[in-house]
Length: 137
Picture 1 (cartoon, rainbow, N blue to C red):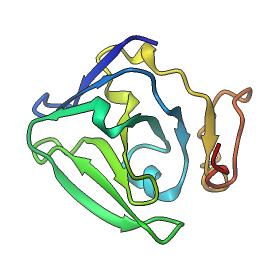
Picture 2: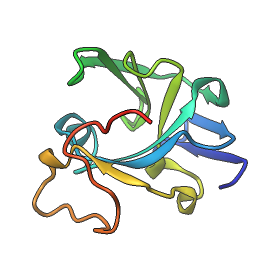
Picture 3: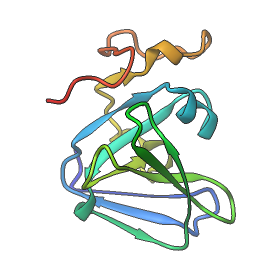
């Protein structure tokens, strides 16, 4: 993995820089991620203090399966979802891997919320799968 990953929204006004090793990388197929994207969300979890966000963002919050809030942060100009924070994962910023300047830096390790997967959304069958959020660790 590269030491630094950078990316931006569609219009380029909202950018991120993430330094160091990801905590996790994978796809989420939950209905909320599906509605915020296009069938799935390519997510990279980083320690929050390793991520720098520049530009204006808006956020939308909604309780997740845990009952705790999940906040999606998007560009107010183009609407791209750029990063997320969740109360269930304090200290973690989730960046949208589809927005990486070098998308090949994304190395998915698993697929979560497969119970909500769309029949036409096929992801590498060799990746470990979880019907919901996997157990910690």
